[in-house]
Image 1: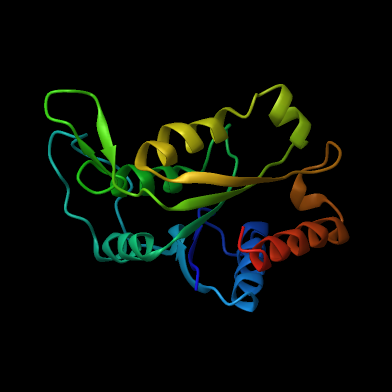
Image 2: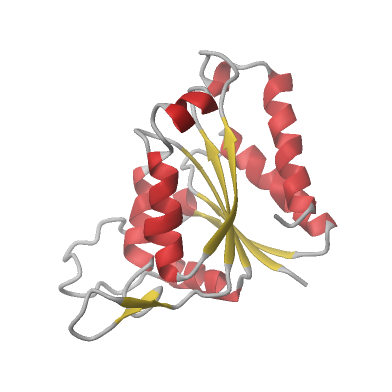
Length: 197
């Protein structure tokens, strides 16, 4: 039985990201997976790595619980919007505070090299945005996704199997697109959950 954790990086519960979260969860449960949830905006933690890497901050109970879920999972589904080319600050703070040396990777003494601690896990990134996907791919060149896939996930041993981009078809922000358009993407994500992608 596949163990999935859905990590929702949108801080607002009424967002499209929460509808996508629910859709993926429904599909995955129908496919027989076990599903756990991490809604970053609902966690209680300091998102600032206040001492950099020079001094370890104690992990709050919500972060410890999130880390246990990540360790149990075979597959991580990241759902978050693109804000200023990357992700919401609270989502980046979650990564800063949790994907630490000694947890997500182990430093090799005296070098910049590291051994990933999360090998064998896979990821699916579901990325919403307020401009057309072609613009993100060809003009912005997928900068934020490249950082997430290569610099963060792969560095820690997680292989990204799929990226789903969701943006408007024209120049209208996604939240102002017709309900039928958003529903099409919700159904698409539910199907991805059913396929355990």
